[in-house]
Image (cartoon, rainbow, N blue to C red):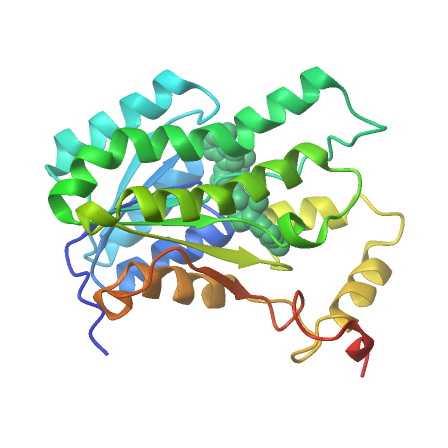
Length: 262
Ligand code: NAP
C-alpha cells in the first residue's frame, strides 16, 4: 500500500523516544521526513544521526514545549529549513499525577502547560503551512480522557481537551481540506510508562495486573502499533477520515471488562 507521504515534512513533538520515536521510525520507513521537536537534544540528535546513517532525511529542533516562544521558533525553524510542513503530530506529554486531593492549583496550571497548551501553539503556528500543503494533524491523547484514572486531574483534563480540539479543528479546517484525527493509547511500554510503573511498590506485580486486563492478547500495545495508526492517519489512504478518535488499545477501553483475565 502506498501511503503517499514520501518527502513529506512531518513535525513530531517528543519524537525522540517512546511513541514519538515509533512514529518517526515509521515515517522514515515511508521515506517521509520526520522532524523531532523536543527538549532532549542528545536523544533527538542520536535518532537523527541514526536515520542519516541509513540515508534517511530527518531533523531535530530543540524546544521546551511548555514555552510559547520555543513553539513559535520551532515551527519557524522547520519552515525555514524545509520550506514546507505537511503534517503535525502533537505527541509530547507526561502523566504527572497532579490530583484533586493531592495536587494544587499551581500544579494543575503547570501540568496543562506541559500537556495541553503546546498542542494548540504548534497547530496555530503550523496552520499557514498546513493550508498550503492541505496537510494533516494527529493528536496523541490517552484513555484517561475517557476512563479517568484517579489522582491525575490535569493530565486527564489535557487529554480530554485534546480530543475536543481534534473535533473542533476538524470542523474549522474542513474548508482547507486539512484533516485532524486523534490516536488514543492505553498501555504502551515507553520510557514514560517505565517511570510510572516503577513508582509502585511492586512494579512487576502491578504490570501483570494491568496486562491481564487488556482483552486482546493480555499484552501491552507496542509503540510500532501506535505509530502504524498515526502514520496511516497522516497518509493519503486516510484521505476521507477526519475528526476521528482511533483507540489502539487491544480493546481496553471499549470491550467488556468482565473479559479481564479471560
Ligand atoms: P515518553 O516515553 O516520555 O516520550 C515523550 C517525549 O515527549 C519525550 O521525548 C519527552 O522529553 C517529550 N516531552 C514531554 N514533555 C515535553 C515538553 N514540555 N517539551 C519538550 N518535550 C517534551 O512518553 P510516551 O509514553 O511515548 O508518551 C507519548 C504520548 O502518548 C504522551 O502524550 C502520553 O500522554 C501519551 N500516552 C502514552 C501512554 C503509554 O502507555 N505510554 C498511554 C496513554 C497516552 P523528555 O524525555 O525530555 O521528558
